[in-house]
Image (tube, rainbow, N blue to C red; front, side):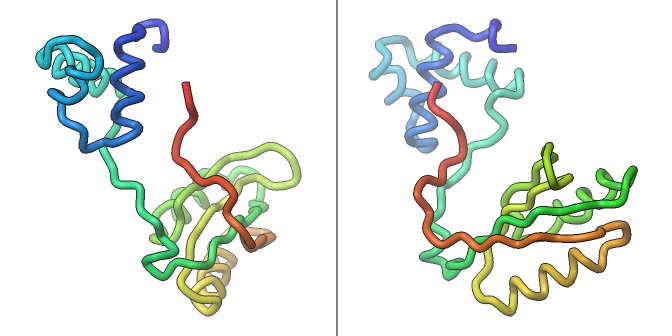
Length: 150
């Protein structure tokens, strides 16, 4: 899929990554192309599934979610997908990954208070076929972005 996009597409994506509210006209002016070109490129990138949605980057700590946890999960063989589908629906979960190594999956979640985290861990442990969890609390956020520079 990467071979189907060109430098202009990448430039459009970089501009939206900086500010998803930026208008097509502003991006066109910055990139020195017609506004219609930007409109067409954005539609193409959406059709390709590269742009999935436009979203706001929130500071969750300012909304009271000061507690972040990374939770390693060990699941009985053959049931990982079933367990992950249940966990992915939980509102505090911001990321869920299949991983290699000591764990089958990693959960990244945010909470307002310890009691909320405690209830979450107990609800995960109550899911059939979850064998064990290992919870790590985030002490300081050094970098937290959704994406990489390209």
